[in-house]
Length: 248
Image (cartoon, rainbow, N blue to C red; front, top):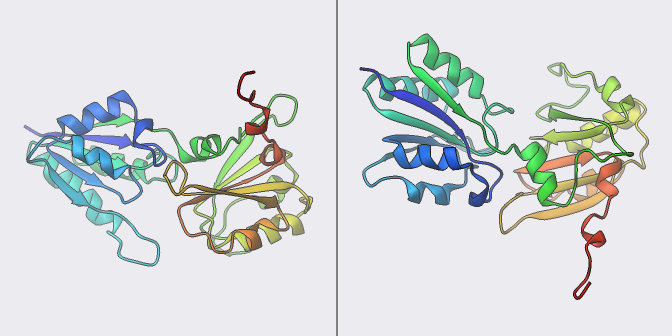
């Protein structure tokens, strides 16, 4: 009898942000394939003897090809094991969860999805940035920053984003942030639009850098992945400053 693959999103960094269902899946797993951005301390909750396989992709470093990850998922599930694919954030938000689901389904393997708190929303929230705010912003867009607006591989309508008047959340855009900001400004975005970069959201080393569309790339030039960029009026809201002080 075949086993099962469960795709678990671990949330953005802080192990406390995993869902109850996600933690239960880890505790019941016989095999766990994990990424380096998943909250790795949660692997300690796995049962003794659980096979833990590091299949992370490190920018500029070692990386497990996606075909190999798919192969391992299928191989262990066909051997009758309870398999968990453990990722940071949510596996269906630029996490290749759909590719893994299809690979397992094509092999006749049952797949279960346990969503995670996506870093696109959870990361800004941890930095006291709401991606929407009544009376200020009526929507937000999440885009990949792997390539800039002028790259031939880009399929994003950056002209529409520059004119949208909504919050723009950029994932995986550390290397291309300068290109992205220049491209948005060239397409009509006000250079004074507030912007923020949240580095290592949900971890003890989390940093928040604030600026504008014209300055944020320079201000954040020493930031290394993982990081999230928020461009829009909400990046200027000082939510933390609105909290009542001691004794209030």
